[in-house]
Image (cartoon, rainbow, N blue to C red; front, side):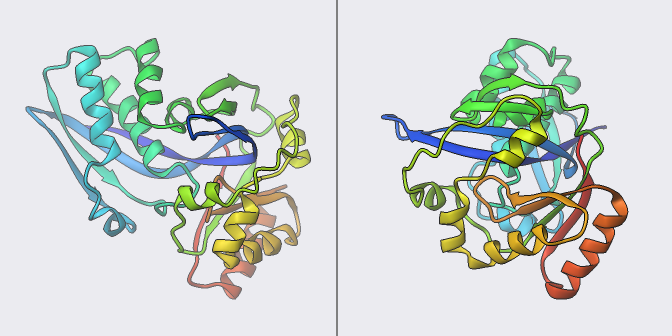
Length: 278
């Protein structure tokens, strides 16, 4: 039995620059990953199967074709794998939350199955498969600090040493927010490029262009971002991706613990994950 973590994806900044003729938006984003996320296990079997458990498993009950199984089938076809796998997914992260979700799960499944089936995880075909599964899957396959452009799948790996271990608090109001309506609400104003250089400095100088439309759809997100930004010891607070999850980077774990307690007292029903950056 092998195990793998689908590390939660966080967009420290997300600039929407244009909408292409193909309908996809051209973005510039800084991706980082938390040390927590969904968990996957797998063992060899004659066929492919997937069992889902965990707090947020019911939200996937009506999903027709899980991205984990799609990733597995693509790997079988590309690498000529005749064997199957029995896969278990423990869904710990909210669905439609701006934290990678199915993309992170698919990427983790690919890393897991590569080990199970003896596939070279660094084979260029892995990234090709990931790109075919979704715009965020290549970044999630790497799961390290990087810059994404284009649809988010044109990746530039950057030095994240200074960010590694930084305490991060993830909070979600338990309101699913689909990506499509948020991007549709973008005002189509290009507010300029995302800076290069030190990732934290670039993120703090940047923005998330999807916050205004997300705020309009779910006002609780604005309240949450504002509350996170006022907590002592916070160096950056923002919405991740298209929401509804938000994050705060803290100077130290004590400040994060105190901030988490304050937020839990105000919003006891929200989802919280106190973690650190990979």
